[in-house]
Structure formats: structure tokens, C-alpha cells
Image (tube, rainbow, N blue to C red; front, side, top):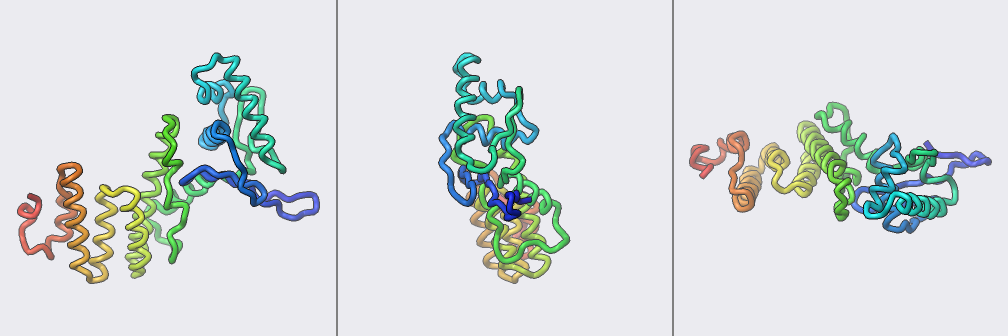
Length: 252
């Protein structure tokens, strides 16, 4: 919901982007945020219920004594407060910090969107374009350990959503759109068999048997070269009518 000013006009939203790369837009302007402040805002965005000040200070300055870490945190909070010309980016409480409720975080929007799609949607879903929210992972270039669980959670959620939406479009006969979603899942996780199965299913549904077999062979070769494994029996059974030889022979 947008914030209204005294005149009743809608105030442009404050948007924090964490998918792909960190950006902060305030009043439609791209705002520079120093690296330490980026990490604080990201940490708070991942913990929607807020975090103790001491935890935030220890996370960002683990090598400093508590008093100095707390002082550094206060300094960063002051710098963050200068980045917004409208409302505070951080809700400050005596012992806890949280991201302000008016800040729109793309990770939160994408997680809700992906979760709504992941259960094999029956209602209509976006058609022609792959939503940008499903194309990027959470700050993939950052190496912070505290990001690992949240990054993996969103990564898996968006993969399930991409595959579910591809199945939905395939069943509705929208093959081009189905293929785009399936290939986006493959690009995100090149060894994920369920994504490759969906690409293959789209080719078969279109009657493009040669494309389906070619894609299977590409996946089989990559899986063997990188992991020393073979595609599952289920995947091979899917193509058995077109292979012209027993499954066991093809598995070798």
C-alpha cells in the first residue's frame, strides 16, 4: 500500500531489491548504500520480526568488542537514516531493530508469489513473460554465511514454482510459454532432473520427438560427466517408446 502525503498524493514507494544484486530506490531514485549498511538492511529484511541490536552488531563486527561494535552499529544506523528523504528505513526500538513496514522488499514479494504457484496451479497464471521475480537468486555474489539458508530456501521455492507454471501452461497448450519457464529452471539448476523432464515433456507435447531425445542426451551426458550418474528410470521410461532399445541398455 502506498504512503500518502499531506496533500493526498501517493508517495513513491521505497523499494529494497535483494534478488540479483542489492539496490535501494527512494522516491524513484537509486540511492547509494555503503557495503556495511547494505548488509544491515539485508539482515533486517531477512528477519521480518526484528532482531536484537546486539545480534546485529555482533554479526557485522564479529571481531570488535561489544562496546565498539555497538558504536559502529549506531554510526551505520545514522548513515542509513540520511539515505531516505521521506521515512525511516529502519524501525528503531530500545533493544530491537526491524526493517520499516513501508519498505517494499522484492524477496518478500517473490517468495509469496512463488509459493502461490508452487502447488501446481489450476487458476490462470502469467502468460507471455517470465516474471523477473523468478529469474534471480538472493544476492548470489555475496559470500556471507548468514545468507546461506535464506538463499537456498528461495532458490528451491522458485524452482518448484517455475516447474509448476511450466506444467500449467503445457497442459493449457501454451507450449512456448511452458518452455520458457522450464528452461529458466534449467538455467537456475543445470543438473536438476525435474526441470529437464519438464523441458522434454514440452517437446514431446509439441510432437518434437527429435528435440526431446536431443535434450535428454545432453542432460544424460552432463550428468555422467559431472556426477558419474545416469538419469532416473522414470526419465528414461518417459522416452522409452522413442528410444528403440531397452531401458537397461540405454542406462549404460
